[in-house]
Length: 201
Image 1 (spheres, rainbow, N blue to C red):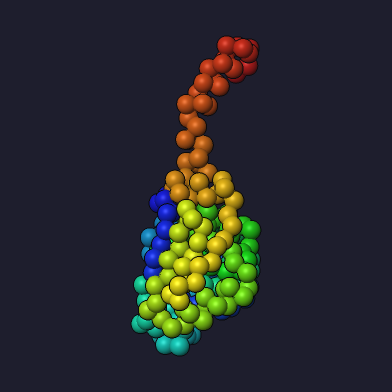
Image 2: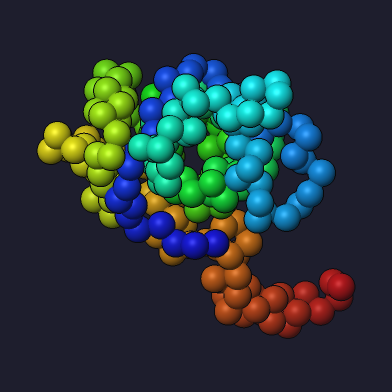
């Protein structure tokens, strides 16, 4: 997993509440376990019309927001079914950070284990950032170490994050990586256990 320290880039505003994982990555894109290429299915039903033609009114189809690395979303982003393809699609499309008032718990866990920073801010702060993002081509800066979001206006928004989650992101450790980081301690424990309880398998 790629460590997350900070990201500077254009932010795409997506003011849709309760955007679920089926909308983030529709079911027809779930037949693969390969992460590369899933970006093409990100928000597919919003990005494209029934005829498969891109909707020019949708934010991610607008030239000013192509290459955006930050997504500013509505509340309860990522609700619905547990679908790890959702963060995979966000990453493949180029997003490293999502800012919203709230996120679904399972989605938040999946993002954490894939190196995506979720920033929770109060509704009024998100609304302010959303308006600034609509200006397009404005650079936002999100720094995990200082736990801040710097807006193009110069305003600084501080966010909270669980200290353990922060370290996982900074070090690029998913759940397996976090366990492997303790490999020496685990091996030492196993050696002691074999000596103290040799009758156990």
